[in-house]
Length: 570
Image (cartoon, rainbow, N blue to C red):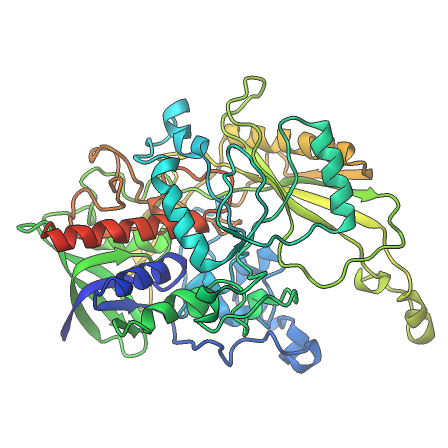
């Protein structure tokens, strides 16, 4: 069976939702293919209105999951390993992948309509000029074919629709944007920020910028989105639509045009290529339940399955014309896999403020942007930033409340001191031999070769981790903290790539078709009507959370693709 559309979008997550919205609003009949199940918004699967005592196992994961080998990697994340949200993540028994035994890789996936846009941490930062110049400046990876000014108007475009809270901080490499009212720092963070900002010329502590609506503008109200209630149940699904996701924003916007068709339970196995026209002609889909194969055709195709999955699909799209995978005449497909990394930070006690408490559960923290670009007094290139926050808890929330009955009740009046904690987000260099490949013998339940990841950090990143521990202590000392304790992963311990869930690379953008997969418009050098705008397209990984950049790149690429289509170029 074959059906024809103007455009096909593979994936319904962060970038796929944006591709669908932009294509539909420009009048293209668009098909979105999602390998996971259908979800409505709000969904019966959301648990944001359920109390802990109303949830199965009180929201905790039963021990039998460990015995069954389920969610092993998800468990390493800790805070996401909860029964009230586990439905939004895949069971590794059903969806395996592979890696070298001594170099495990964490691949967190969400197979449902909306993808991981339902479970992201909503930290939304523009990349700055130095982020797009870094590869050319120090010679690592492939030079970005665009610069900040190319993307700036598209950052404006996506921020206005998504709704990003933030303050205008005036920082050179963390550009300000089209912001809603920012969240406020609590009293302890305010004290720390003033001390830090006085103590350093290059380090600034700011309130985090996030995709939760602090105010509702017309563009949000039209889609039925409401203001954030500061409950911090975002990862359970937000019935208010207060945080940005494909389900709450981009897919409804696409749907109201009348141009959207969505097919869920549709596992894309490959994209079929015609060498005579240099075009992708069809997308082959395997039905999740029946294993029946279907073909869909379109004039343009946007691949947005997530960095690893998009590279996997391209590698599996082999033909006589492209035996090493679609859009891979350069041989670079599957190379330069990256992720942010942590593994260093510090905590410290803030004295005083004992008569003060914070109210509500603000959905963002504090941010200290990368301040180590182009420094000569360090043993590494690139740099890192810090994220974190200050809090004060009742003694009963710490897990060490003594006794039962009256003794337990009395302890609830005891409060811990204010504690400020920060953890690093480091920039992993693009290494060509950090790769995704197809497993030579193992396939999944749909006959598709498993993704095999082989990625590890190097001495440059180890040096960052060592420096970040020192800097964290230095920053908290300047903040006025006492009893400071630091943490860092030892040099001889494996650092799990993928742990920040910011996978990037695999189909990098670049100037030269001989050294990159995509051009400056996210268009495949080898395939005129194929565009890749998810994390796979990234030529470096910066230090700031990347989702806002995916959104802006996607909107920009759609604009170019539609113009080319209207001109007859596609």
